[in-house]
Length: 456
Image 1 (cartoon, rainbow, N blue to C red):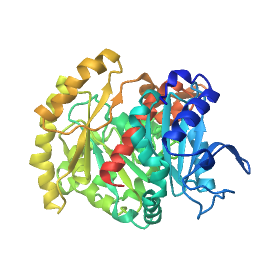
Image 2: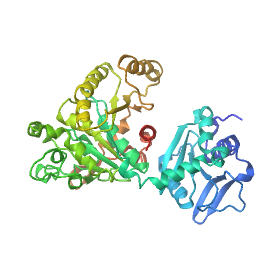
Image 3: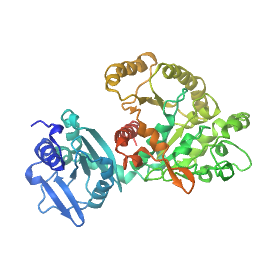
């Protein structure tokens, strides 16, 4: 039987036409291995399926691998239901959860006390991806025990191995205006939502990441609480000689899971001359990050669009590089200077420190027009130029240009007579603004790609 998402006009039809008539049979679940409208204490499940027949079924540490499937109306934003699905999976010790509204399907995997998104696609693409879905949650895939073994290893080792596997990513391009800050802050939020302990570092004097994570709450200069403790004080070997725990802040109402942030400040511009007198300034961030390697899974550095000391410090400290680009001519021309900068300065300094060359994860298409004609005809040509002309790989995912990405950062609230910045991650913004849904999906997919490429 074929699946047509256009026939799913309400929640009942998503249940009957997608889950009962198509998905469960395709995945190999027979009527005696799945149950509908299951009540377990205060929890009410739409569907619960088992890889092995078990009557009566019991959910505990020794139960067979199982799947929860939740169906929503096509008008429902799935982001609003992920927290409830996380509660179901972690409370009931269920390995996988499916969340779908017919127009989209997502698969989440239990990961310790949290969940992570491992697959998503549009309703029109379900048939084309059915083999991948079977590989993840098909009855035979779960029965063979390989996925169960992988989950046990990941859960048992995640805390013990954290100090050995902290990975640092620089978000860098010589060209400005390509969405570096948007990528940095929302990728940090996406990785945090996937259960990773994230440190976000702002090394751009414009302090856009600092603003976007809610740390600039003051309206008047005399109230500035960042000028005496920011990224400069990590790079400076002055009398205080501060370290990351002395500088780090919690993001402010930015994401449901708040992120550790090292803020920047406009004073970085004038202070660079002081740092430039000491060659050690470019390596100090890398050395101080090594001291907190047991505290974080992933560090993300938002860099300046320059070839200066701050850019050098960022790239010397990083293990990986993501290059956001709108793929337009000026951005592409800037890729040449990025490659030369890494080759002639960054990797040489890294070698002197005993570090391997930085790994270029890829050029990330960002601020890409969502226009159908552009996506169909122009965008493929822009993509093909990157590996052919500049010999750089492309990320699998892209970030399209949408007003929600700007609106979430520039959100504000009125307090008395003042308008106070109240920026949100795209995931928080999507909870009450449906126009942000597609961008949230794109950043979740990007986070999955990043984790896969870093093997974390």
